[in-house]
Length: 247
Image (cartoon, rainbow, N blue to C red; front, side, top):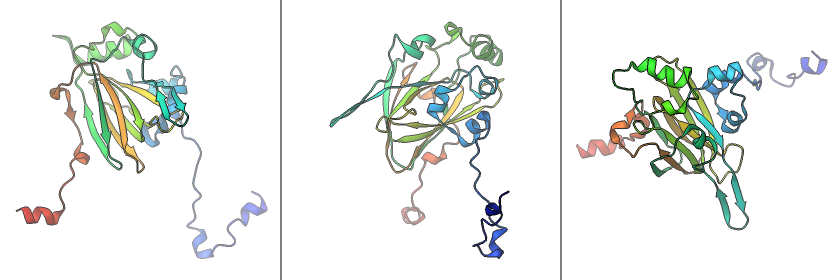
């Protein structure tokens, strides 16, 4: 330690010095950051998923793919989402049957929800899911897109935190936290995300800006495919005084 470092806090009251703790900015291991603090989506796109620590932290079936947002000076921007016959959706053989849009007001969140995996008749759920997402992960023909809801989403406006949690039968509990930018914030974090059934997901708006998202689903909307978990954040109660008055 240099003399300067030894005397760094000499200008601070001695009674306070012992309570000082410098902030630690060192990067934690990939798996820890992904599951706890969260990572920029662009870091996930650039990650080598064949590396052992990344492979062990990644939720099988989840895809994070880059999107190009083109600036149109004096007018706005143009962002491509996906092409049916190119890129990740072509590779995994998924093309949504329904496209939808949603707006989230600033400082709000969508609570965790999950879509049920489809298991063949007389099949054992844990065995089937392990075959599809572990043993034969790249055998995309096994996926039952017509019978279960997969989500493909991107964001046109705002910034969000997305939390994914694998709750499929027989799978270890893995968590992925990522930060995604809407198209009005051009960056490496302009991405699309594929979320398989059995992976619970929540979205939280970052900052004071409304969020606009576009998403496709492998099946038309079925309310029975929406399993809610810890979604009380979406239920804003009336003020206590109002509730008392309405009684």
